[in-house]
Length: 427
Image (tube, rainbow, N blue to C red; front, top):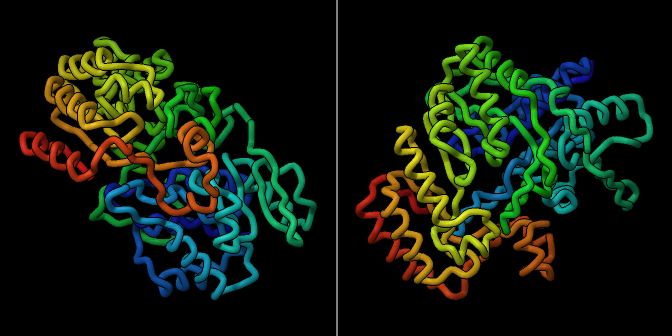
């Protein structure tokens, strides 16, 4: 039986997020008859000796490395993740230069050729790898031509071979993600944010967002009973008591979110969870339903409180919807958080003040604010303003920040408001 080691090089612990993509891949590999295990560097020391121990003990025939993010997306304190991925692959090569290394994950899918080039990896899979990864292993073991493997990209003889990503729309046919199979103990002193995905694809048109490119613009839904089955498994098999729905937005379409909540309630799953919501598609009854189903926290990615900036960012809502969302959450007594991006297109000191005044007007207790907008390939922001930029440059943190705004003056203005709001986090 072939052995596959799946590695998450992500060391971020604030928060520590369960590697959902690797969970899906491990389930697919195990179902295909392979012995697949996971190493998550969020739980173990990032050092060569640690990596060597796992490699020597498990002796994998193939290794998959998941690249979830390019960097920490923080303009004021940027930190690239390229070096740590390169380091992990160097450790692998020093142990065994012949073991095939396969890259994947959303960060890889954004810049696949660049990642192959800077890491010297053998293969990569763009997009969903649940079907593709086991198929690639089977063909490599059988020394068969690497044909009809969705999303596969690799170099051979200096020539690039690339196939389109998996267009399989039936999400219910995918296995539930494995939440075990680690080669190490999980840290007990760090809270892990577990996650559930109920759909893929996004039809919204936010200027900077890569979701439509990564998952498609057509929203593909999982059946609510299947989602509830997965949550039941998380509780009964793994002892998980809280999680986040990690869809780009949980309430588009709203009816789908309602059905999932009813399934959770009818099965008395008794879990607490959070989600991302679009401010336009909520009602008092919807929020009450969420609360009955266990929802304890909501995040709204509103980006700005200025009508001018909201239009420039491609948002499909305005101040009216923001005010209403805050009001309804308070009526339902559900904690909510507004996420803002300072310095986006059309941002000025005037629009910044509009945003801050709206947050106070809405009595927002919890707010998370970032400076700058990360430039990502195949987004409207990149295509409209940075089309001449080399994709190689985007492996490192690159941000858009309005020329009409001075960052130091903006920070001073924000801090005058933050002094009155202990729950406002600005980074």
